[in-house]
Amino acid sequence: MKRFLKVVSIAAISTLAASSMAFAQSTHTVKLTVDCPDICNKSNECLIADLNNNTVAGLGLERVNSDVATRPNFMGSFTAGSNVPADLAANGYSQLGTSYNASNGMVVCYYTSSMGFDPISASYQLTNATGGVVTSSGPDEIKIKIQTGFTK
Image 1 (spheres, rainbow, N blue to C red):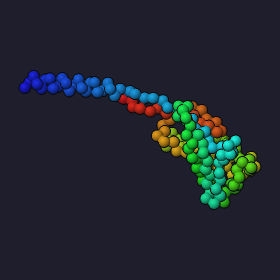
Image 2 (image 1 turned 120 degrees about the vertical axis):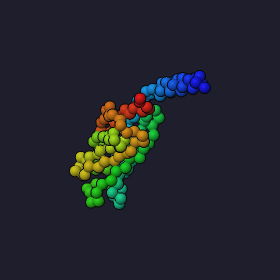
Image 3 (image 1 turned 90 degrees about the vertical axis):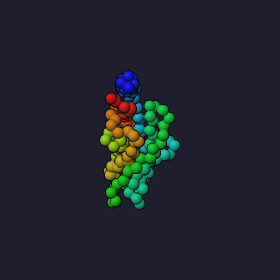
Image 4 (image 1 turned 90 degrees about the horizontal axis):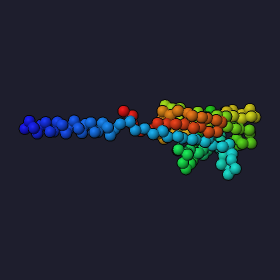
């Protein structure tokens, strides 16, 4: 019986040692590139202002590790009575900047008007993309690195 318990104990210790090696650090860096919706582009895809619902919406681009792009829908709202026209392109709107909130994975695109209309913004919630670091950002694009996997 003592011999049996000794063999079982050795087997258990060996299993624990092997399993801890199997769960050693295994992380991977994911690179996200997010392009904001255009005010209006060549294929006539535009950031749309809906004055009845006080919202703006448009399709952006999201690429993971420079792979095939998906088309996330950016949404934003503004206060009723704001000085926001229905036709953003005709009223001098352009892309101003981007931001990323690492705590909730939100990307925000900011727009301004050269004709004195109120600034607007549209945002998109990235999926499983919290805790990232911005590697570069500009008026219409932001690049983010996110560590994925397990650390010991």
